[in-house]
Length: 530
Image (cartoon, rainbow, N blue to C red; front, side, top):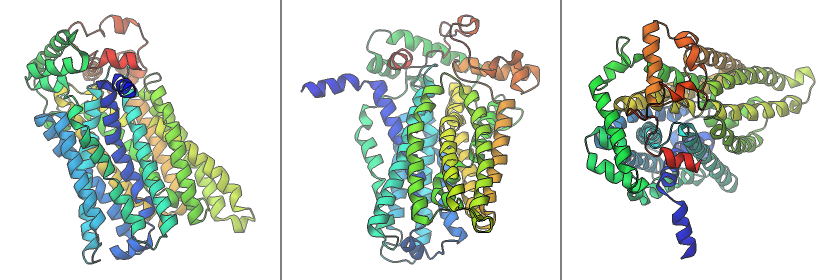
């Protein structure tokens, strides 16, 4: 009994929330790694009636992202109406159904196999897109101002774990069963069911966010939820703060999608930041690297099997280096990581263009393929880690920090929608780029990363270390100024993270006393545990 008692002592509510959210995010990562080797399985291609260079290979991969876009909208409405927790559960059930449809596609007959696979990918996208929209909101509403980035970065490290798990299972089964065996691609698909099963098993232990309960005038339930997390002491005080913040938002009026999507709307500016964050993340090219990893290494001159092992090594290094993401994001800030990572990625892809050219033309240049391939592996490993540290988390985190509570789920949904469409385009066009541009595809990514860094430096404010209300002050100041450049809004105050104990925090920024959201929900406990 002693070990069980000890486990229960450490498994408090905030730990359970992080573990649950991490497992849900790992489901998204698993799908990213799932299709890498399935796309090159000969039985899969034959069952779908496709050649390896057929554009439909990319369509099957990318249609998932369209499902994600639609799923984000549906899930945001559902989570706003029924709760964050029920929203997550509905999305898990949908993802599980889509996964099952993928598994049975062509199992008994190849007739209609590709159609069923497309349907399965789309349905699974609906579920995973919903998870991507709701889980960051759920997590952010249960984290303190100085721990929001750390919590989400830890959850996205689980995303990379899911990617590693999928690719490792794929690689193991491919080596054991061969690329001509149907179970080498079907088993990795159905094994994904472990994620929704685990999440459903612990679902009753999760709290609904008191912030959502207050938003829907369920004050008694909100207090019970706070007591469940904190105990009796301090619960009423935190409830009063949440009610005060909600009443202030009611005076300002509820936010609609038209307020967010049209230039005249009061939330249009944060929507542009959200949209461009996801577009720029897609432009880094790492949606393509995660799905088409082996093909990327083949461009550097490696044989198919070697490229697959190098991809596995890249994913493992990626997982380890993600530790720096949650160590740095609440210390250096979202903006600092985004800008510096984008420029490092641009330089990396520029070097990879040169190395890809040397590897492709090694015979004419009378050089060993390894003389370009080995440096290329090192650069690509470092570039992948740079993306994980700087670009994987902030585009998901920032939308949860810059909208008021009444628009947070919609903002997160818009984020997933743009992510879905942007990655649909990238994953659809990448195979075409392989076939026509070869190693010059690296140069395209060098240019797009340079653009992402420039745009972020110009227009993306630093949202870390501030309350939700303080972040909204940036947009109010920008509106008064009539300009969106960060360096000209209030003297560039939002260029960097505010210093701890600065005048901003102690003065106008300290809004916990007047009902602001400086201390969201699990604030004191999360700070103590980090």
